[in-house]
Image (cartoon, rainbow, N blue to C red; front, side):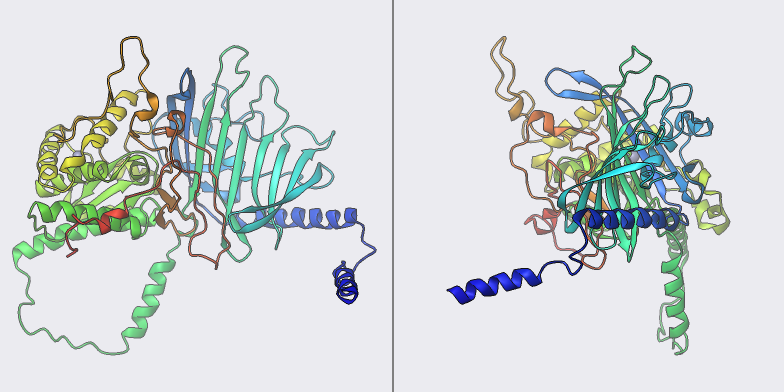
Length: 576
Ligand SMILES: [Zn+2]
């Protein structure tokens, strides 16, 4: 026993730091120096990038039972020129873009123009902790603890500006990964608020996208108690997402070099029969070419995700509807996802496009199928897109004109026809028994449209239909067990009619790839946790590049995705 004990002591002694002379204080100083220098390198490293930036703001009003609910919203999409600080090229039209040209006042972290409009730059600013003096002359660092953010081990510090550091300094907490000392998350506010300057609280996340590269990707901000113009109470919550960091033409260039290698082996044309193209085929090819051109252009702009697993989920639903309705559509239907949060869908030829936001908020597979059925109906009814996109010069336009140039919205007559056809398709489908929630979803959208007008305003396609008649076999679950007079209905028993934004799909800000969330079910969801169509904080599961193929995921979602279950559904007909 004695021997073992003394061995343990020896081991413990040899595990002591080699620089025994270093005081703990000294170690702290060294780490802080590393954090500061890494942050300075980071500020230079992000300069070449021009990601897309989307900010979606929901103003809030108090609600007795739900805490607070959306009352008005703002949407902004633009391209950030990080080499120029917080400069943004707007992609969206309207008031949001108009605000961009207005001068910011008050400096760092200010999100209002003089006319008290939200400024998109104010939100973009939150990718920076402090571009002008993040050092020991301006800040005090206090070590808090070690903490895992996902699989990344971090050191947590409280950071406070020193007395004479001046206004607009960051005050809050930082999380620093423990290998190269990159700040991967910072949460707090820019200090120095006064009556003419408004600063907001924010939580800013960076994700690892390559060796030594942590890029700003997700920012949640909110303010609940602002002394706004001394009387008006302004409170809001907002999500800012950055993506499209790797929008170069690397994929095309790789393909080209592959082709050049292949071309050294001559190709023998082995088809001896039927290789002429008849006029019907020619027209189909022509239409397909227009479709491909648009899809390709949208992907290069960073608006459409590259092909991936979420497309497959949508295509499975399309397949289920086609098979049960005996449809044989040629060329076959493809599905793609628009990367934006706005709720919209459209069909370009035989390509059906759903926005990420719409997939996020749909409560279940049957309601997804309802939306898919609508777009599928446009295809079945042969509502064509403009064939002009088959000419390549039509694709050469300035990025900022994208939304003006492309528009896939339909006429009211086409919308009505598609709604009627969709109902027909659904009645013959495996979803016909489950359309109650689809109905509730559309009702919820209808009742909330005044609170979230910008979320439901499409930029390219159609508004989500709210007036579609879906005959459902199951009774609509709305007033469950009619409450006795004077008794409040039991809120907990009401079904989930729509999920919060970010409820299903996660996005890789480097590659724009989308995946379905794989979150554990959370069990019973309280009424105020349902947050239909709402903005919620980000809580990322950080990973190091190389450990997994995705760089971020969210694990705070109240409801898990079940769309993947489609593939295993016994009703699902075999894939063609
Ligand atoms: Zn439509």
